[in-house]
Length: 231
Image (tube, rainbow, N blue to C red; front, side):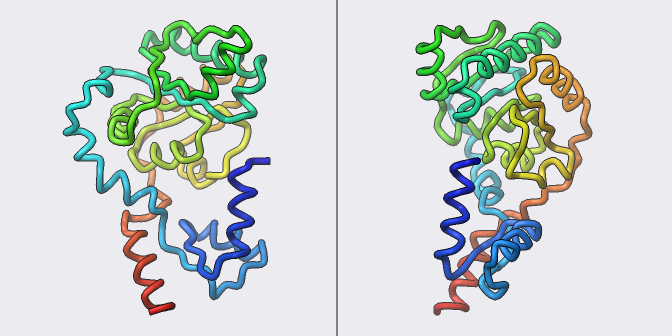
């Protein structure tokens, strides 16, 4: 049901070379009928980017990313923000989290969500600090310094895993099952009480989980494979 996954499957079947981030991804491609000889497990380039840029991000002079102790929230998926009842339920969950923990929630409001809030007359949840989406460096810094991340983003699930920041995914499924397996991520859905319960659980989680997405050298491996395959 996810547009990104539909696009991925289409791209898989018109590609000569497929660079899988994990062994699980390789097995899934084989199940899709992709020839094994076309698949190379390289790790995920999502690891390369934070490892190369986190130091620069932390040295950034952009004060917009200095929020002190905080939880970070992003929310943009169609199934969450286009349904007013579901969006209101998530916002109620954020209010309860703030009331229970007394910690600031920095909420980067996506333009789609902002538009739907205006359309349906839904106010941002109490206890949240609403801001516009930030540039990559500022966002990376904010992610790395968060006590916990609440998100419905796939990419943020990966980045938080790499940065050793626990997160609660505001969905009922995920295309990043590796994050669940290593216990860096948990699915909460949209029920307010479940969101609170999962947040409290994840804040106490041991952050020494393994990174399933590689060592930050995926880009170099991809270049090497392409050099060997096409010269």
